Amino acid sequence: MASTQQDARGVPVSFCKAESLANFETALLQFQSYFGDPTVTLEKTLEHDPEFVLGHVFYASVLLMMTERQYIPMIREHIEAAESLAAKANDREKRLTLAARQWMEGHWDLASLTWDNVLADFPRDAMTLQLGHLTDFYRGDCFNLRDRIGRAMSRWDKSVPGYSYILGMQAFGFEECNQYDKSEATANAALDIEPRDGWSVHALAHTLEMLGRYEEGKLMYTSREQDWAPDNGFAFHNWWHLALYHIEHEDFDGALELYDKQILPEDSDVSLQLCDASALLWRLYLQGVDVSQRWDRLASLWAAKTPVENGYYAFNDMHAVISLVGAGRFDAANEVLKAVRSAANNNIGVSAMMAGDVGIAICDAMIAFGQQRYDDAIDKLSPIRTLAHRFGGSHAQRDILTQTLTEAAIRSGNLGLSHSLTSERLVHKPLSPLSLRFANKQVI
Ligand SMILES: [Fe+2]
Image 1 (cartoon, helix red, strand yellow):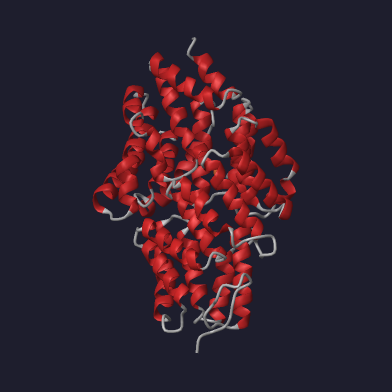
Image 2 (cartoon, protein in one colour):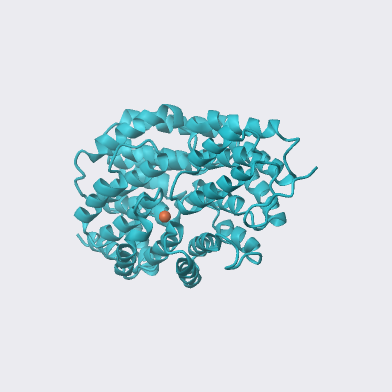
């Protein structure tokens, strides 16, 4: 007999213990808010209720969102557990299991479509909305970052639990589609409902960054710090955005203080966190700032991971490369590049596309820049800079490529290119002190 159980948003759930369903809600809120660890909650739940299909699928899917190969054995275990329970699962859960398998096997694009089909039938499936949203981010699919949420939005309002998190995702989607007024209004609407929503704070930070409203951004972060920062698993990334505002205003010490105290205060093996740390140091390096021994420590953290992670996700690979280059470990950086080449040739799915379309050229360019072969860096970066969304990330994150290209043009004396890139930057960010610094360097 089909189960009549539903989650808090009215989405049907197949047979499970009542306690498991309550725990699912806890894990979902942890996933949405980044307060607490959903995998810990789900692991305990599955110990008591090993036939909780949705629990297995959720566990596997949360781990997929880490974008790390090291978790694949654990992910596989939970997907296989869910598949073995197919006779008890409802149709949605079977499709969610399929999506997790598609993602695990490298077909992030197919998983994205499967989730979209689920959402067409269950627009209040908050877990799937967020999995889709994060995957849109990892694939650099800005229109779906906005429109996947839009397709479900007519079925959401303030009365549905977790509405603010849906608004927060939509706000980020608007920002990545350059709709800044809508993004700001939507993020503020979300924060009026749930001030502790770190994703909405983040959407607002992106918008203020793109509009060059850096002082406002700093104030937004500092005035709300008690909401988004303490004990929040996403705080390192929000701190990273605050550090970008410091770099704009040439407060490099302020940026480094955030690096030391908030962005990478302790050793970590989380790629998402190491990417932010690497990107921050590289931006400072481009500005000629001495970051001291920080590169060495960061490169060692990456080097401990790269034998497993190399070639899994080109966006992460690029950040490993810049860290190794920063530490002067060119052999290790070239090993990563080799793995990216191999991913382009051997792998199936999005990994091969990302590596082949942009990953190889970007890693190659960053190594060339570190070896002061600026013309080579320009040759590699110029053709793919505007296609780099194919390996995911945000506009703010991918700006590292434009900054590197601009700096390479300045250092190599390529005045035509450096003028044109600075001109482009000033159109979008006329008030940006960083834009003006690039412009001033060309006069010298
Ligand atoms: Fe961000």
